Image (cartoon, rainbow, N blue to C red; front, top):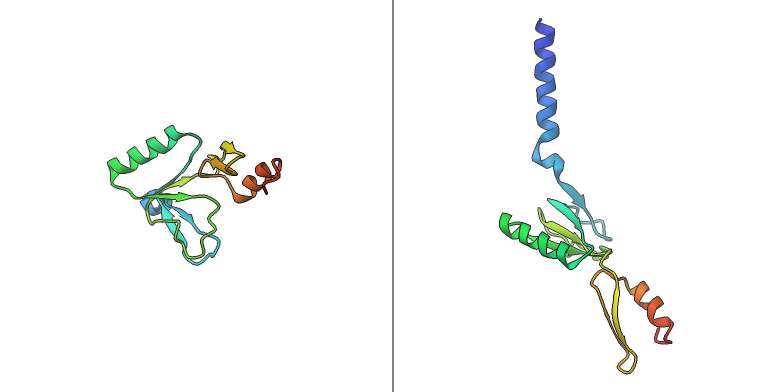
Length: 125
């Protein structure tokens, strides 16, 4: 009987530790690997509606928002502690190209490499 009581207490302690809020934090780092930061969640953005919903949810909860792409900053500038991190990498389309002005309009998640590949077909890279 005493063994069962201690086993029950041990299971409760383990559950409390596993379900504590810190265990749900997501730790992110940038290219510099200097400043690991815990965020409350990561939203993988695929549409403007995703962005709007994430911003509205964060505002209701008074949580900061961080926008991230390839995370190439060196000192954690693109991250914010306990923030909702918007992963913009899927938001990566070329929206418009103006060949006369040599100007391209893109979504915020596109990489420089992808832009170069796209404009290369017009001899602009």
